[in-house]
Image (cartoon, rainbow over all chains, first blue to last red):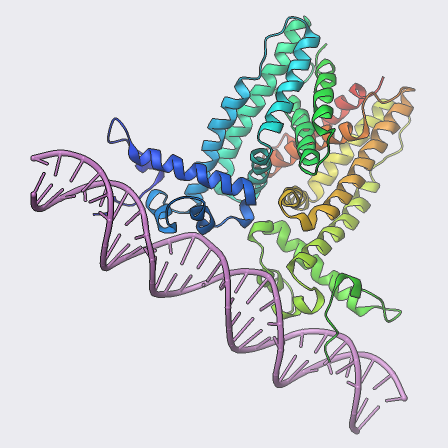
Length: 209
Length: 209
DNA sequence: TCGATTATTGGACACTTGTCAAGATTTTCC
DNA sequence: GGAAAATCTTGACAAGTGTCCAATAATCGA
């Protein structure tokens, strides 16, 4: 018999090692690669399957429909993303070194996986149209905002000062800088990364007092 | 006889009043409305045609293919967009009033046509994947950056100071704030507009010295 | 080992997509 | 008014879409 209709809720584990959940992850990771390559608008279930060792029919065995697959991908993206970011809050003694480390960290994540970040901005745009993506995207946005806020408050502590703007504002500005750097980096600008480093270094002091 | 194959170059005018170019504009404007409503990924030529008084075949009489239609739309968006923005550089005597006017201007454009701005961010994301859109999108980006730069330099003049960051950096930060405000505005946040006004007011002093 | 469960395939479906062209309609101009 | 040119409709095409399902293969517990 078929496993009864697969839904998000049907992700209950049955065994110590859950092969079902493993394959879901495997498929979602392949889907993420395809999405990062082509963008949401140009990615179909069949092209996703082509980038795996399996056939297109299998996707509907592990995911109820396309929306569930994509949202699962988004959540999976977050897992990888946050993990990557977390390693970035370097410990430094002086504010200057801390600011430099922050700039270096942002530039490093950008250089490390530019296509994934491109996908992120694509999916965030899609979430403005597709209600189904909104909750997951918002959750990722929150975790990114929290990470930026740790940067700002960390810098403030080192300078014995207090942030002069909200968490949301800090995130918006850094996100703007990051997004612009990504765009320029993808179009071949050699200075994009250095500019991101520098502007990060210069923005931090402006946000505390 | 058919007008020989329509290309971008075939926009030569034949009459004092060029009905051909007029109809192109009319179709593109209808397409813009549909795009703003559904987003790029969900908009087809047939749904665009459904929002006009004409049939889907006509689109290929006025545009060579889908890409030419969309890029024409993007250029047309720019015309409307820049025009709307231009009215925003209010004249004010004191720096404080100038900053308030800037915040008010940004909030007004956002509130005036949120769906168009949503489309803008969608298309800008698409341009990261679709080479064909890149040039037009970049041109719009430049004109937006120039507008923000006029804001910043205008404020600097009033305070007898000089900008402490580049034009690109200013644009990136304001764009980040604007984009976040748009997202929150679209998801029903009542404070989004006021927050944009306030953060604009507070960011300007930080960018000059 | 064998029967039942799980996993996977590949083809079919109904529908949508961009594109094209032949024919009908309207406009233009002498 | 009528020929020529411009405009618009209609229907078709091949290819692609998400979804579903019967048939097959692999796995596992007894």
